[in-house]
Length: 286
View 1 (cartoon, rainbow, N blue to C red):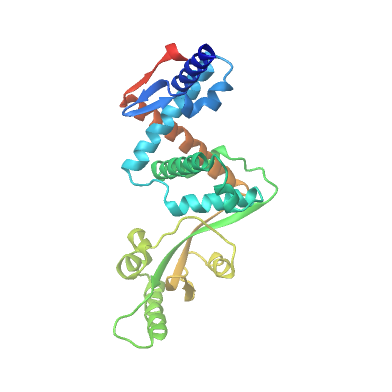
View 2: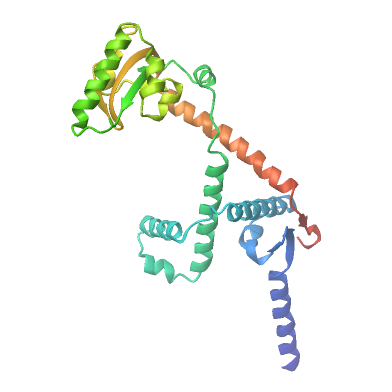
């Protein structure tokens, strides 16, 4: 019996040691066999195991960066995600919390949100050239969308007057008269517009003609000043600068191109994190 107990004790100790075997180092963080055991057990080759370890290394580097930038998952974000998980599985949040592996689930949710926050932060300025989008995306869709580009002068407040609406409309009417007589719309926009677009003379991006106000602006002739209309930022006048027709799938296609570009940009950025990190994989224990 003593021999059997000794054998069991040795077996148990060996199992614990195997589970806690360090298989990689990332800066000051260790990756143990136990931490990615389920993934490693499903690996069909040593190459697959190395790929799994490298993915975990990338995750750790991203989590370190998210912490450094202070964009980690908040407690509220984690709780909201857990609520969504409970709803999608038709169980209560209390039942999820009673799950034996709840702490691991919570950590996994926290990591995924933190990495997503980092991805959004790093790729927030990734865009695609408008001409590239037009050239790449198909224009053979059955339907087309009309877009216009306008310049606006938006006034939200006139100083020292009680009847703001009347005063603003009166001021815009004066500007409109001057512009109709040859004054520069761009110049007046830079001087008087109270919207951030004043910096570029009130010029907007391309806007889809999808409401009565834009339909009215679409009918403007060259250099014709619009009637006064209400925006979310105040009353405005505008002139129509350009028009174009685009395929109905242009927006979706452009979004996909931006996504693919951001995905590649982020992948290269993560590779850059690896270049400056201390990484060691213990291949002999795999």
